Length: 301
Ligand code: NAD
Image 1 (cartoon, rainbow, N blue to C red):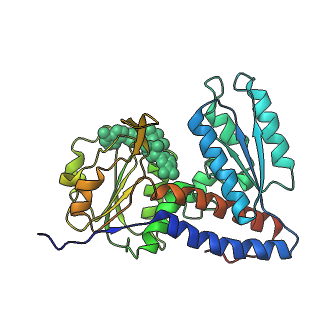
Image 2: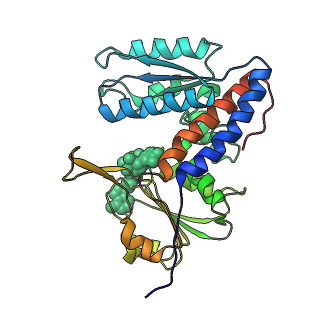
């Protein structure tokens, strides 16, 4: 029998600890007559998007951030969304703006991201904020990769000098994740390989990694045979797969948890790993946005 123990990281616990520190920052802001405000805009009938937005609003309420929520008709022309963004850009009570993606097909996502005032772009997707991240001078780090970085830090996983493999090259997870890992900064300094759908032999890459971050959106893509002994495995994936239960589906990650856990030193579960960190880091960015816009110094965690 193997004596191996694998640490399963609890994203809820790490997220709660960060939220407690953010509550102190919010107290400091409140003392200066500032209540951080986050506006969410939903232009979709998609059930998953509705759930994500309501989770974000609920999290705001829990920590004392003012939530403003707007639902727009998915059939409405792009101008309706742009007018709403313009209005929120001007609203002094709104420090952060989040337009829930995806937007309807008749609207170009890039036009939406470009329209948001970069100072209020708490998702960190505006080209100015992407550029700042790449240049090593981030204003808002995108929430999911930032959450992963915080999880690694909480688990005392050293990134400096380590080999990291990021599976996925999306604008919201893979690319910013790789950018954070290569920065000459704490939580960075890793030698980073980015794999994607055209990668020839994924297992060959992951088997060389100290840290594997799976963000491909492919259920259980990374199994135990692809994980080196003792590696840290972070599973960003959230995939609905058919299941014989009341809902008719269950959520699985991009990692085959049971087999990967046999090999990994540290692993995140799905759900309860990266997911709660994403929302926590949105709160973090909203507090940071309020602090910068109102010129009130806070000690961010
Ligand atoms: P995406 O579809 O935009 O990008 C997926 C990436 O994976 C692409 O770059 C593609 O090249 C790569 N890929 C696809 N198949 C591959 C394969 N077989 N081998 C290697 N690479 C492959 O997805 P995304 O928005 O980056 O999200 C990725 C996953 O993370 C999804 O499951 C999504 O639901 C989840 N997600 C979770 C959170 C969270 O908070 N937990 C946040 C964002 C995304």
